[in-house]
Figure 1 (cartoon, rainbow, N blue to C red):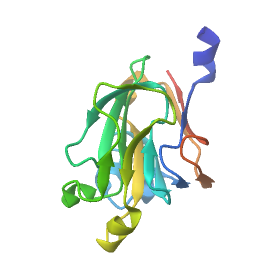
Figure 2: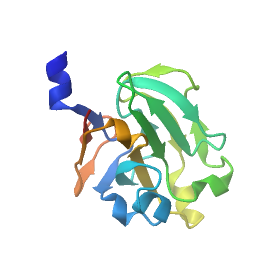
Figure 3: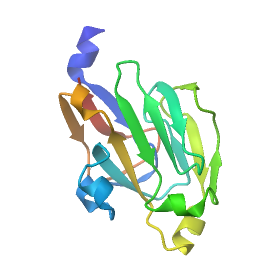
Figure 4: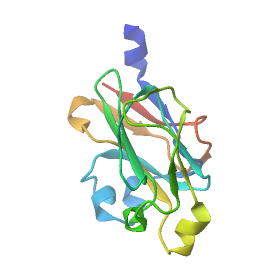
Amino acid sequence: MFGFFKKGLELVAPVSGNAVDLSQVPDPVFSQKMAGDGLAIEATGDTAVAPCDGTITLIFKTNHAFGMQLDNGVELLIHIGIDTVELNGEGFERLIEEGSKVKAGTPIIKFNREFIKEKGLSLSTPVLVTNVDVVKELTPSIGKQVSAGKDIVLTIKK
């Protein structure tokens, strides 16, 4: 078990799309790492899944973002799109409830990509460690197409 943490915890893509550096997100809260550190995915899919095993601690009322806590204390935020809170939940469907224990790849939120694009909003989806102070090292895997629940996008060393 201790060797597992030396290697690091690997997070899979919560959405399918192109993995990019956080600096490319069109919102300074994310691009300047005010909300946490990690990477973003320009979503091409329509379902957000758990990037690893853990507990769903928060699903925003508008269903545009969710938080997770991992057994090792790391906290994550997956935010589907930019300014999507303005949609007041329209185009988003919650698939699971807060407090649920999930495995990597478990579907959490379904979203209507076309509707979000029609509203002129970005589908850039930040994948953040919000309590970076408990982490020694974050290694994002950017510049490639990733599939939700399959491809590793972030390695966390604690």
